[in-house]
Length: 123
Image (cartoon, rainbow, N blue to C red; front, side):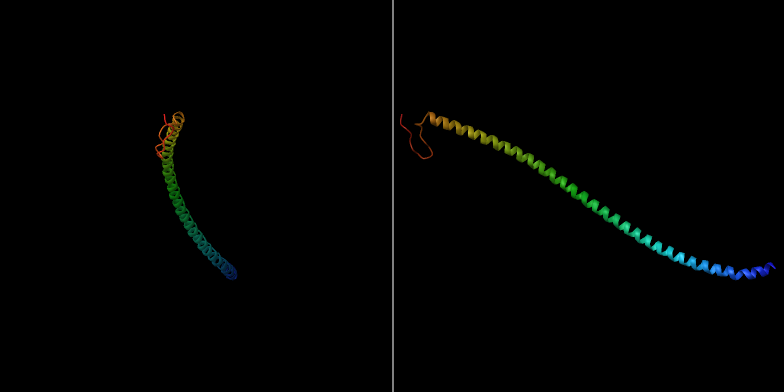
């Protein structure tokens, strides 16, 4: 009678197997769909990382350029500062000479004015 029970259970097993087979196919489709989604996400992530790295390199290059520019401008500023100090010193020297000339002119008003050829008071 074991063979009789097996024949009776065979349709149930087949039915369960068909149902399981349908579920398995559905799960396989879901898995395939998820794999496609995962692959797309991996591609997007790789692209994002690549773009991020390119942007980082571009920013690093910009920062390097800016540092170079700042160093050049700082050096130029130091040169200009040195030049400015020299000019200030020359201006101070000229102001001092002008002041001495004014004092001398006030002390000795009879001196000939070379700029317009006029003569001061005679001796």
